[in-house]
Amino acid sequence: MPYVNIKITKEGATAEQKARLIEGVTQLLVDVLGKNPKTTVVVIDEVDTDNWGVGGESITVRRARGE
Image (cartoon, rainbow, N blue to C red):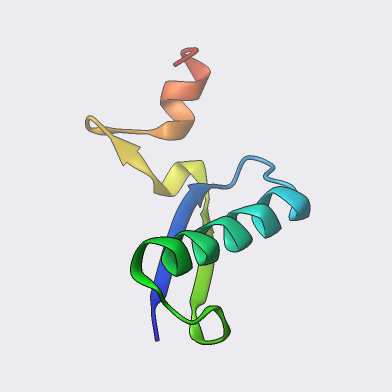
């Protein structure tokens, strides 16, 4: 049973976009590894930008700077 955990920043991904991610990742595992889609688990975690850091600073700070 494959388990895939996708982590994205909480910046407004729509339900449709998340559904497409789940469908696409599931299909990728089917195509590449021959996995059964009925037993493939995909979890999307949305992380607040204050709780995600890159290069020693939060994404909130980077976004405020235009990065």
